[in-house]
Amino acid sequence: MDKEAISAKFNQIFNTEAEEVYFSPGRINLIGEHTDYNGGHVFPCAISLGTYGGYRNREDSVVKMFSGNLADTGVIEFDVNDLDFDKKYQWSNYLRGMMLELRKLTQDYEHGFELYLEGDLPDGAGLSSSASIEMLMGTILNEQFELHIDPIEIVKAGQRVENNYIGVNSGIMDQFAVEMGKRNEATFLDTNTMEYDYSPLDLGKHIILIMNTNKPHELVNSEYNTRRSECEQALSLLQTKLNIKALGELSNDAFDQYTYLIHDETLIKRVRHAVFENQRTIAAKAALNKGDLNLFGRLVSASHISLQYDYEVSAPELDLLVNEAWKHDGVLGARMIGGGFGGCAIALVEKDQVDDLIETLGAKYQEKIGYAADFYEAEIVDGPHQI
Ligand code: GAF
Image 1 (cartoon, rainbow, N blue to C red):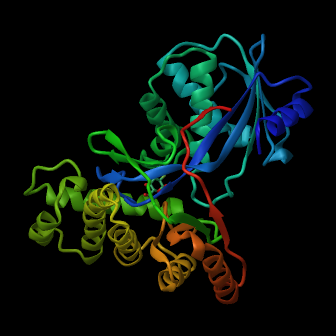
Image 2 (image 1 turned 45 degrees about the vertical axis):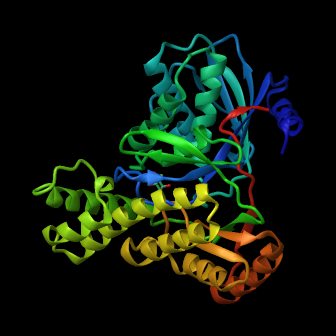
C-alpha cells in the first residue's frame, strides 16, 4: 500500500481528492510483557505493518469515515461534535473516542472531515491495530486542527479511549509504542515514572520474524482482567510490609524475601512473572546496547517460559511455534508477544535461516494445529506521520 493507492481509494469512495495521506504503525514488543500495568518496563518497536488514512477537510460539520478493511459497514457518518460512545458507529468508535478525548483537552471542532482507512495489520493478531487507529486519529487531529497537544498526552488519551470508552482495561504500552516509535530503534519505557529512551535495534545478521498463530485471542479480555486483579491483590498483601506503589519497584531479591506475605500459589506465580519479567527487560536492554545478542535472545526466550508457566497466558499454538523456533539453527530467542492466548510470537533469527525456518515451522504448525500460521518480516519504523 502507498500514498497513490490510498488516494485513489479515497477518490472512489468520496468522489474528491484526499488532501493528505497518513500512516500509523502497529507494534511488536521485544520483551516486558504484562508489566505495563504493574509499573514495570516495556521494550516495544513500531512496525511497518499498520494503518493508512486518506484525509480531507470539509466545510460543514459532517464527518464521514470508510474502512477498506470493513467495507460492509459502508460510509459511517456523524456530526463532528457528537462523540459519545454508540454501538451503531461500530469500528469508528475507536476514532470517535479519540476525537472526544482530544476535544476535552482543547476545544470543539469547527468543521468535519472525510477519512478513508485501510490497514495491513492482520485482524486480531495482537499487533495493536486499535492503538494504530487511535494514534492515527490523534496525529491527524493534532495536525489538521492545530491542537498543539504533546504526543504523550495523545498516548494517554488513547489509553483512556480503551479503558473508559471501549471498555478494555489495557495498559499504556501499545499506544506508547505506536505513537513514540522511531525507525530502527526500540522504545524503552518505565511505566512507573513514564521516563523513556531509545536503543538502536542493531541486530547484525539477524532479523525479527513475526509468527502469527492465526488463532483469535478470544479469552484475552476476561483473562487479562483476571491477571490484573491478581496482581493488585498480591500488591496489597506486599504493601502490608513494603512501601511500594507497584510490583515493578521490586527487585528479584525483594520478591524472594517477601513472598511469604503472599502465601497463595497462583498469586506467587503472577508476581514472580511481573517482577522477573521487569528485571529481564532491564537486562535485555543492557544486553542489546552492548551488542550481546546471545544474551538478549536468551532473555527473550526466558520471557516466554515465564508467560507460559507463571503468568499462564500462552496457548498451545504459541508454544508450538516458539518451541520449534528454539530448536532451529540460527534462532537466538523466541517468545509470544502481547496479551496472549493467541495472536503472534516473534523469533530473533539469522537472515539466511529465515526461509528454512518459515518452511519448517509452517509445515509443523499445519500438521499439528490443522490450519496455517503466517510469517512476516516487518521493518521498524517511525510513529504516525504523513506520507
Ligand atoms: C495488551 C495490552 F493492551 C497492553 O497494555 C499490555 O498489557 C499487553 O497486552 C501485555 O504486555 O497488548
